[in-house]
Image (cartoon, rainbow, N blue to C red; front, side, top):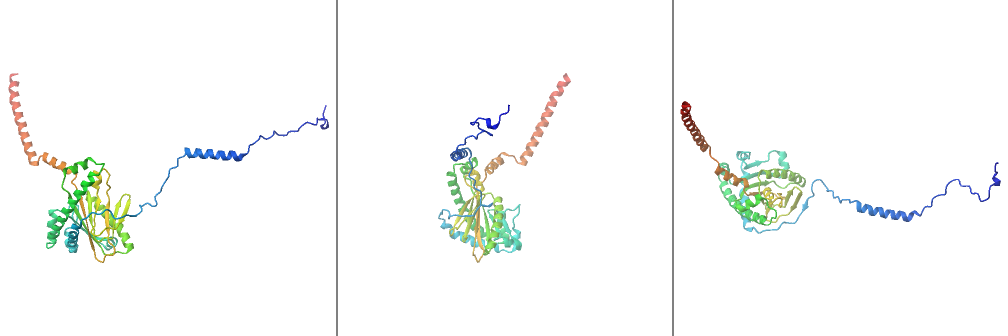
Length: 353
């Protein structure tokens, strides 16, 4: 029997969907969740502090003048040597060509030729001097009136600088916590120090844009020169320079040297025997506002390598070609007589057998 809507009870409730679930207020839980998430990220994620370089080439830094040591006794003598050295660069080009550097001759002149290079380079000429009999003969042939006096002054100055180099190396060795076996062996032997001097003639004052271009050109040339002459210390004599630049793998710095300054930089051999405690750098003087050509000198002082001492002992133990030939003849005769002796002994035995 059908039931009409009017006959249904009054308390009947018509539900078309289930009631919604109760939802708590989201403001407080959202703050709590943010705090938990933030704390989790702070403890789980360690973001490193990255410092990117400003540029590819390291920034130029200006530093204070390094500590000074009084060498006033050398100042006047150095100026005298520089004045005499100016005469070398006044020789005619054809005479300089006779004493130019080559693979067989590591000393002499190297002149910058061509207008393009002269416009780019502050150094118009350079000359490498050393204690060498062949150099003395060659230079006296093209400069008979002045080279003897110049060479005597250079030998005296070189001996004084080598004495200073010995003392500095001794101090560096005593204060170096890391020493290689080569360094200990070299300093204990007290070997004499050898030196090579590079003399540079700097051109007259350049414009600012020309000087910036020439600086990079000259530095590349001198870096190549530094690899040709391995050294422990380099003494720079550059009276009158307005700035001095020091170049290394990490960048370059500059300072204003004092008058009559004797600047010392570390060479590659010192970096080797100190096991990297002292770093090899390259120094270069800059002359600005000079109306005349300027002369600078760089003495490359070096201790004999460990191979030199071993070569001396090996030479003492080796035989000359003449001795080897005599020994070969003696061994040949001994073998021949031994063969004849054995032949004479074995022949009767074979007959009796």
